[in-house]
Image 1 (cartoon, rainbow, N blue to C red):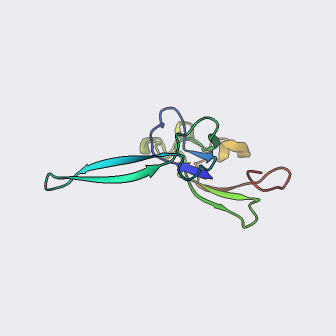
Image 2: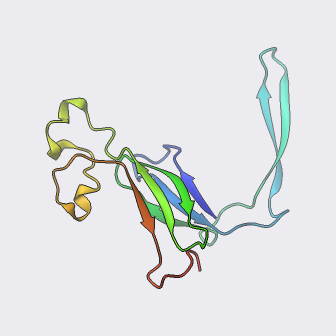
Length: 138
C-alpha cells in the first residue's frame, strides 16, 4: 500500500513524500471515540476503528519530491510494473519579486535533475519501474 502525504506538517524539514506501508489485519487496531461540539452546544460522539500504530517496520519512505512540491495522482499499470506519480508545482513559494532571477527560485526541478540549472520549475509526471522489470513491491 502506498500513501501520499501532503499535510504540510513537515515543510520546514522535508518535502512532500510517498510512503509505503505494510497492510494490517482486521482487528489489529483499536476503537477510538471522537467527540465533536455541535452548533447547539451538545456533543456528537462517533466511534471509529483505527489500525495498529505504524512502526519503522511497517512504514517506509518510498519517494521524496523536490522542494515545495506536492506528490499527487498515483496510478499503476495493470501488471503492477510501473507507477505513474505527478509532481505538482515545485518551487511554488518562490516570491513573485524573484521570478525574473532563476538563482532565487526555491526549486528548479526538473532542470536541476540533469537538464542544467537556471530553468523555471515545472510540474511533471514521473514513471517508476524496477531495474529487473518486475512488479513494484516484489
